Length: 167
Image 1: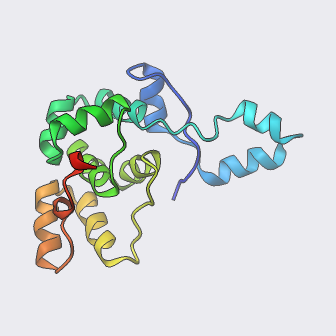
Image 2: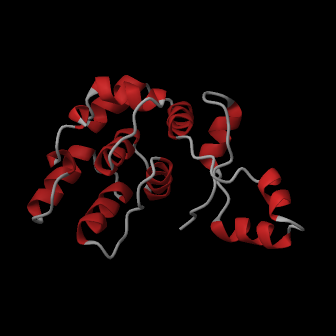
């Protein structure tokens, strides 16, 4: 997986869209760190820890030509809460971040990045439920089709958790 720091960028800019496309691999960042004369040099050259979810969501909107309303509708996320997530006012639960990934039509790599930016663990193929979600993401399922598959296999559906807006 390409866990690593995001190359920070302003929301909506071409630079933000580029950051959504290409995030350095962990191995690349480690090589930069080890090649640096001091930790400070590395930190000044690399924006480690810059994991702004709202900026990433806006970059995805631009990259995929989508609207917030369309993403929220496709994800099944409460619009009021969803707009707060897009504004960076509230953070999503792991399942809400997964639902947003489906709403964006993310592939696995984009979904993993979205989860990291939201402060959650990545999907892991050794976890039964995560394996189903990974399969659904990679095969272009909608969030609701994924819920059907999860239910069919006896796993907790994405939309079955407590109401997000009440948190």
